[in-house]
Image 1 (cartoon, rainbow, N blue to C red):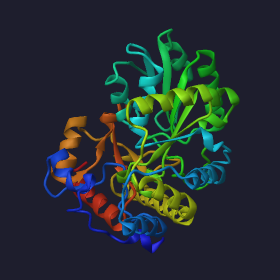
Image 2 (image 1 turned 120 degrees about the vertical axis):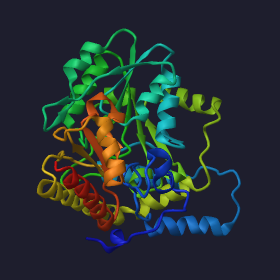
Image 3 (image 1 turned 180 degrees about the vertical axis):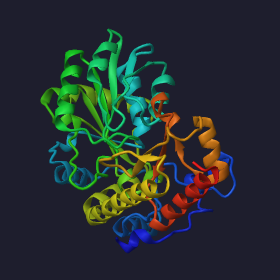
Image 4 (image 1 turned 120 degrees about the horizontal axis):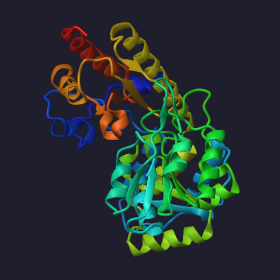
Length: 392
């Protein structure tokens, strides 16, 4: 294991949502935060060096876009996903969730239907509902062990009012990395029913050994013409607070319309640090990332072994990527509300309750694995003590 990821870094008192807002969010005392999806690891040194250089210059006026950032993004997508894009297709934004919201505003009307595949990243619900669009759920097919897209159900819920589907790829929280045949089948349905696709691929770099990310837009020319591919270095390199992201739009007409909407919303400028961090991460962060994912996958296997040995009524679901673990808890004699209370008050850990991802997640908890092994071990030991105390 890389020693750089074993280092325990104190984050309390640093205005960290994960560490400084846990009591306010969960209500308990002395909780160990293992919830929101940011890492307890420093960004790559090359990123820190680039940001230090920017700070040392000392002037933070309005930034101009640099073509070297385009080149760094283009090279990254080619190296990591074998996806060749034209740099003209890139639009830079200040976060993927706001970007999805802007896309919904620009390409659908109030009352139009937007599909999400549940259980799924919970802001997806809000970006549809708060824009006064009708949310349509297409639950993933789950056989008790494995998740798949339910494409038969998907076709059954599409109406003349359905305009868009928001795809989570790789999927948060269930950890699926969708395969080419699945994406091709989805693309055919979207072509048949003329649906826009917003593909949130923020976890695309966070793959377990042997997995390969295939951008949805890359599966066919028809898919490329209707897809907004949302990407960012923020999850990959722990840069969420810098608010850097981008969207690839290969259809020129759609790209122009989105650019105009962003300009009209005064949302077409990123901050002075976003491009600096993006360029440094993509040009110099590859070795760091490869080491990270070895560490995260080892953390995943550690949790699986620990749970199987010490808490057999819990079950770690298979995962193909992300640093988020989906823990199945249906054999505990607790309702979701009781389980949440037990974890907070007795185990003193803060996890994401699966119910926030949708009704289909009510028997689950989501655990963030992107922390030093010592932190993960402490969290598991806390849960085990509470588990044993109840006699589960």
